[in-house]
Image (cartoon, rainbow over all chains, first blue to last red; front, side, top):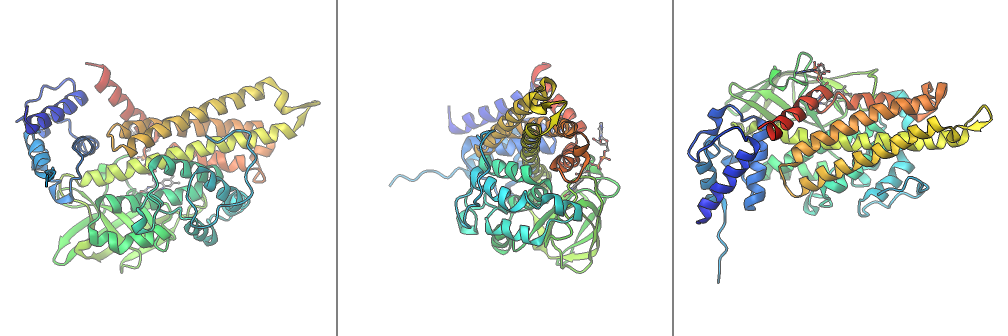
Length: 86
Length: 388
Ligand SMILES: Cc1cc2nc3c(=O)[nH]c(=O)nc-3n(C[C@H](O)[C@H](O)[C@H](O)COP(=O)(O)OP(=O)(O)OC[C@H]3O[C@@H](n4cnc5c(N)ncnc54)[C@H](O)[C@@H]3O)c2cc1C
């Protein structure tokens, strides 16, 4: 499984654990579900930062980066600095 | 964990020493406890105490050393706020709102904002306050705020009123939440900005000395650098995140109130004789102390857990903090009532600290998410988790 797919699975599991009644696809707009409030948005950001060991700067905190699981996995891929091997 | 029977240390830690529970306990016993009732009556924490807090490095010890802090973890920060809350909830309230602004700046601020404000917030040369509530809303109903921020060429124009602002009489920098056309944003507003008016609020029931004020913003012009954090969909996170840390501080301070009730009640009942018996020998009195001991330990553990999760960056800290604050604040209200009861008529007197603890405890059930809002939020979580 690629890192990208693993990130998607982890993010999806987190959202599903918080909203067990919802059935969510990776490309689905989670804001359209009507569950997302600022508390959950904060939990989501904390989860991504902790799980993937990164800090999301203010300019990346755009709604489009969090609209779908795929968009969040893209964000993780973009923000993850590859370890250079000399 | 603090022993229930340990004699209070008499020597405060020297300035610059590593901050921990014991050093802060000594600081509180030396500098706050002996005068807390007197300044509560006068309705203002003296400037001298606020300066001593700065000398002890307590304003923002969680800041990195490069910004003047001690990199203090949040578990220990909770212990610091518990100890200060044991001595005086007005001082702890000043620390809470300053902590909220300082933390928000560190978490959401741009490098330039951090460079401008953080070192002075760390020393307390600049004091912060948190401004959400308004005369007609913004307390429980955060969506109901009416203060407006309009973006214009060169920055922002702020108009509106805030009420119940702890530290507002003294603070130099306000973290103000205001409505734009699309969201609620956070602005850093220096007190000296033209159009800012501070009106002291006096004779509040509890935390009487916490320098509460009402603020008026009349066409206050702010630069673009006043915006703290994102202005987009994520702007709500600045509010939620800052309230979460404030809630943690209030929860910890509430543990301090229960500990204060326990210490005062143990001391009083060991001295007071009624009908030939010391109060401490009466079973009904002992039962009250047992409940205080049990609840203070439980509340402290809940705060500890919330702090550990914060230090780990774990989102579970948010609910852990709600639960800790609900338990600790209700325990503070319950046990301060019993502490007054144990003191009889003396419990009504300003000569005994339990009267102040009782008034202050009531505040804890209202601020940073009232009891009703806490119950709603915790129940929502329960249904989300268990009603599949
Ligand atoms: C001493 C003190 C210091 C303060 N310091 C600050 C500060 O520094 N900064 C700041 O911004 N604010 C501050 N506040 C304001 C505080 O945050 C608010 O008082 C608090 O959030 C409650 O809001 P409210 O007073 O507007 O009550 P309201 O929102 O009017 O609520 C009134 C009552 O209705 C209940 N209620 C509300 N909604 C519901 C519901 N859906 N279901 C059931 N019951 C409900 C509430 O729990 C409360 O009991 C302070 C208040 C006090 C007393």
